[in-house]
Length: 480
Image 1: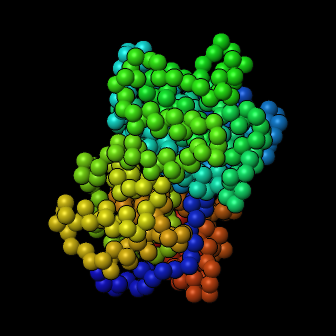
Image 2: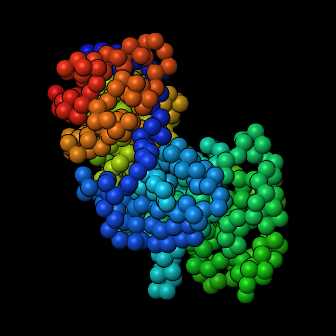
Image 3: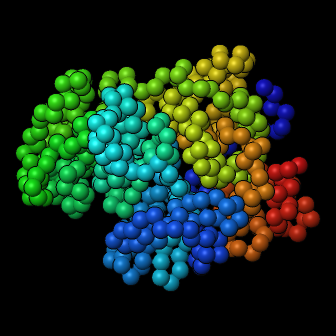
């Protein structure tokens, strides 16, 4: 692969962070979205199906009443957490609006319904999940929670209602939602009991949460309860009321009495026992559970996944400048689950350790499979250059959105409407034009060399030389 388009393959220190793709607005949301119907309601607000007036795409909008929110810091915390999370099994936040009465979180539309509803439906029909089905689903949930823990976030409210299917298909991926009770924690103190507030649902609450001193391993307990429910359709700790349930949770005693358990492997039962260990010190971490043989053996093999990636997409992406890469990242981030379903499956098949990101070795192995499948020729040096070109935030791994950004079909996705949405992200002051400072706010230079690179990109796009880029100039940058 010749680097004949300049030095785009050099390892740049310019940082393009995922949170830069999420815009915040003060003003009337109805100027941008039509509210279609109410999807649900909670203590602090409602969730609506909304339609973007420009693209006609559908989203879920969480509307939160400022009057009902007693602790505004918790809502701000949820927003800040969602802005940083980048994982295929965690719900995406796209935009934030605020007016005098409400906060609006515009998020991806998840069409498949709650995991809880599917459990109930299948249990009623005596159609319980097989171990293979449970392993596939559970690995996704576990991978998302492990990603949260690796990034210093404890979810604290894991339950079937907070796991939602992306679509209605049987092989749909699942997404973790509702980070309203989530809490950041310090990794250096993660093995101390550094959280004290009793939160969550008693069915899934760990013994130490009930006592009021706990760490992120409370999520592992909740996951153990969830796994038990996925297998059997019933909770391991049950009772006539909350007090009775809490007593059983505190004792930590449960059984595999349901008749169907006799057909479940000892590996699965032993994993549940391990996760539902009362002693926090001996309970596994999410990472340790992810490495358990029952999880890894149940995961789909790469050869079973249809390979639809064209290597030309990766090569084309590597030759883009930072402006085009950022816009690609924005558009990829806004693509629906349906648009990226195949890429999502490929990502998860390449992500062998299930941590929600790709190391250079995992990417190499995945591309080696593509090479063999499509009889394509690519050298190790080219693979390393591709890795460097994709790793926009320079953290040494390929995050989920970076992978989607590098592999989605740009010819199809680079529509005028999608490019306009990206233009609005850069147009921070909503003047209808983009200044150099606004570009630098999104594409963050860290050296003089980076600033010169961005200045060159800006100058090339600013066709009339007036020091600003209007939408026509912005559009031309992607159609020339």
